[in-house]
Amino acid sequence: MDLKDLPVTQRVNALVKALDGAKRTNEALARCSDGEQMLDVLLDASSRLGLGLTRWELQNTPPIRDWIWWKNKEAPLTIGDSKPRYQQDGGQGRPRPAGSGQDEGADAPRRRFLGLF
Image (cartoon, rainbow, N blue to C red; front, side, top):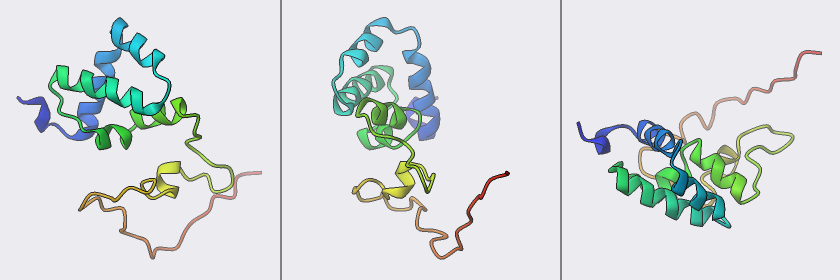
């Protein structure tokens, strides 16, 4: 079975599992000054493992997406709306790939959770 045929989330999970215990790669990630450098290291690791992940897939798939935001000192949540940042920003100014399905339900009424007090 070719690893490139797996869904993106499974390939990202395989990358995360491969990073567990990979001392040199983890040290390289720790030395990165921002998320872009982290992406370069992760792309290299992905290619060595034959996962075929793209920069866009790494930037937009958890948990790596959240690691990059953390490294860039960006909060994944904003206070008030409590929507994850990737939903608020609409891809953070990047065009969405065709068939992403994120425009579905745009006219649906929004539900708010008021909490239990």
